[in-house]
Length: 58
Image 1 (cartoon, rainbow, N blue to C red):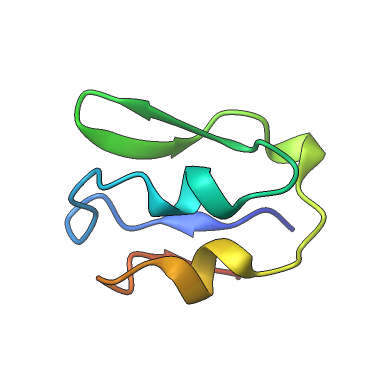
Image 2: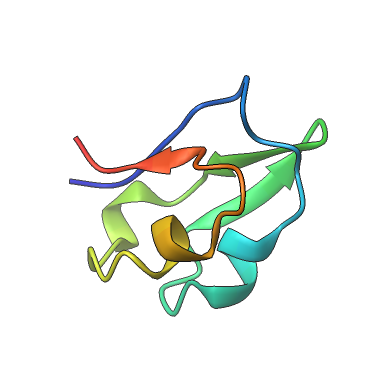
């Protein structure tokens, strides 16, 4: 399962995109989006890197 971004908590800092080894994220409209969910390897680096707790795994 790919991560889910809580757009209300995301401030678009891009840390998730920086740490993601699978290049799953893009920043669009000032927020992080899961642009390539099929590429997610579920390493959870994005979840750990997010300072706002905006990323979770269902």
